[in-house]
Image 1 (cartoon, rainbow, N blue to C red):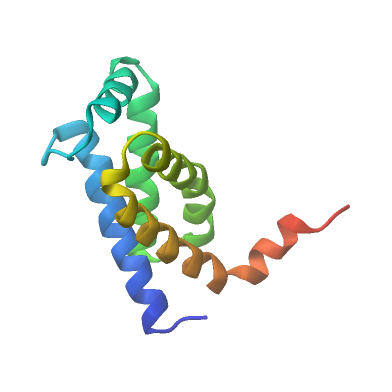
Image 2: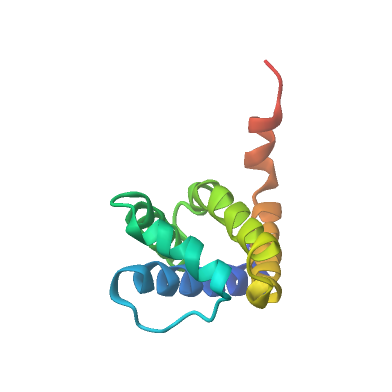
Length: 125
């Protein structure tokens, strides 16, 4: 299960999600978006709790991936966030779509490396 590709994917995903999660609180860098994307992100930021919650989960899951502790839990936490990132870039803002596809590819490889743990979720009782 542990190999160089797995370690690289975990570290890259960890760094990316920690930096983007903390960017939601401290605005280190500006993320280029279209006006429709800016409108949607402005709506999320105007909400009192949803945007900080999303960014907190991103940063926490990124830290779990970076330290490679509780990686399956981090994968479960990131699944809905990555689904929304893909939907956002497909529907509202095509600028970041290649980067989002790369994130999903890294994520799917990490999940594939832990496929035995996730098979239990797919079994019928």
